[in-house]
Image: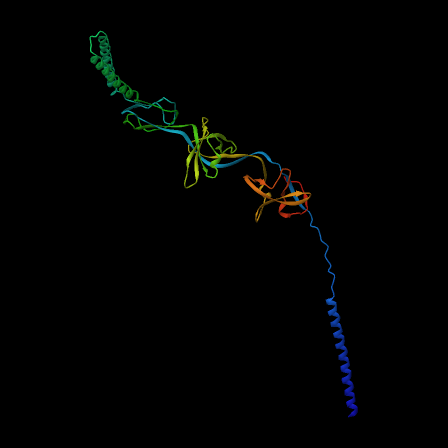
Length: 368
């Protein structure tokens, strides 16, 4: 028993020593790791790499000496005048010399009325004037010789004046049996037929004057202040050649604006003797608000929308620089820059979407 106990005791002591040694090694390792972790380490920074230049296309800013601020509006062609001719006396229509659609001149006969009922009155009134004139002359001579009273002379004078007035009335009625064109133009409509009886005030014909026409356009409220009578305007009506235009003059601007559309009726008058425009035709009118001097125009696509406005990029010493700009009018695919650019600036017109302030750029030729 004693020998066996001694062996067991030796075995336990050996196990304890091995485990104690392991524990010490583990504790030492933990301590070393803790110390190493607490020691400051020198950070290694990666070397900075410079961004490669961006290919851009530039255009030198050159102002326009004069730039017309124009805008286009639809308009309608109207005749210079439409005249409805009416009969001033009653009578039966005897003849109508012109044909409907033909051109007539001022004073040309349109309709001839029958005079059978008026001529007898005219002859009678004419004869009465002759008799009264003789009586007046006789009384004048007698009065000079004191052979007639002043009353007799006054009666003869009054009677002559009355008969002359009657003759003038009948003569006027006789003249008005010939209904004449009051103005030149096209006999657009004949409203009566031969043999028809007309009364005073009865319309017999319609004359339309289109040698001069009015182009009527409705100008918006925000623009009407730019215009006055005698201002010029361009009218485009030829669909075969959209660039061909006619020049007219503003002759009327209404004092009252349309309360619903907030537009003002404006009439542009122009010569139409070549018959290029027809009544009722819809045309395009180009109006000029003003002429801008030294205006800077740039492509619309060169302008970048920002949260607080608009900007463009220019090249300065091979670097992109951002410029905040103020915008003006738009002309097709270009826009006016009111502030932010100066003549001579190299504006980036392609590649500007890929640059940032300070970005190095490489200028390449503009693609045609």
